[in-house]
Image 1 (cartoon, rainbow, N blue to C red):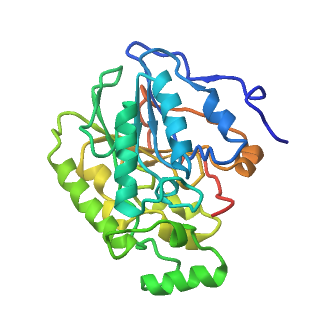
Image 2 (cartoon, helix red, strand yellow):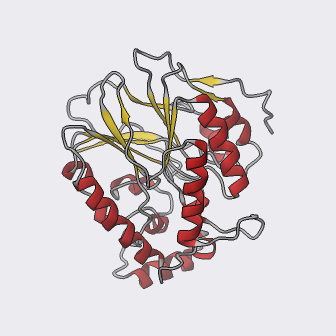
Length: 310
């Protein structure tokens, strides 16, 4: 069944506490007609609410700008971390920039809309459970989440091709001017690591990245070969090394909460219509990151889902 904007009522956040809420969403994929009304329905619960957008808004620069403009007009502050889909260079996009130049174009677009990017100072949210510094990250992946049994990137990719599970990034996400996507990832990880190390540890961080920061969340994928396009082992200890209140990510299309070393990790994706039609939105369209109750004793994974497609 197709949905229109009139079929989906406005989706306000939970009633805000004093100081507003820190809310999050990802993988809006507004290039799909049935997802655009979902984006149009997103509204804050109060004038003080912030929205963290963890990538994959869309593929076309016109769509990305439309969505971020709409959200920036509704929420007190919008913070964006790029996903792989924003970095694609589709032939139908009026902006044919590739790689780093495309990313910088999107950064300048966001700045024109008042949207915070990974290139900007970390804003400090002062609501209940604050202050926290919100750190949007742009890290990519380096094929180190290899397919089961694969010893090298080449072997891992060969297994993916043999099973027909190949991310479209291989054809649409160009690393220019870097020679490879993993070289671009290495540069981003090194620069981001230096910046996080220089951050004042007295102010906890909310880390916002499109990809999970550690491999464990990918273990529930239906297609384990897809994990190699889902992050890097180089960030596996960041939630411990840097004082972190919460980690926000998307990409897997498996909305859930997991706890690692006492730190909450929130996968906040909307996903594709065939996915949300099957499972609904049991956690709501906007996930509240803060304020949040403390971790339960012996915290483990909360809710397990499966990713249907790549």
